[in-house]
Amino acid sequence: RSLHDKGLLTRGETVYHPVVQSVTPTGAPRSARIRDCMDTRNAVAYKASGEPYQDTPGGFRLVIADAERVGDTWKITGLGVHEVGSCAP
Image (cartoon, rainbow, N blue to C red; front, side, top):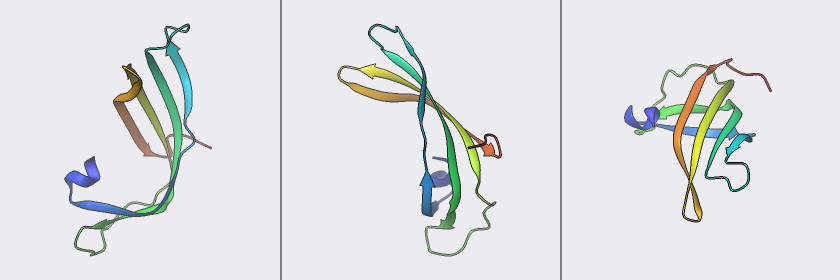
């Protein structure tokens, strides 16, 4: 979202490895916490006009997401993407 707000797009590949850390209640989950160590080494930001953007190098970023079940669908209700180097694969 922050890239979009700055008028930026991304190219390249971002690799995800999400793992469900917890669910509540355990018998019939209605909420979950998901953790990932997102790999952005092969993704770069650029301006929507196509011009280059001075981006910091990618790397491994800790991502924590909260999800809630709404009917038959899971919705992300909170998302935190941390700085490069905040996790290790």
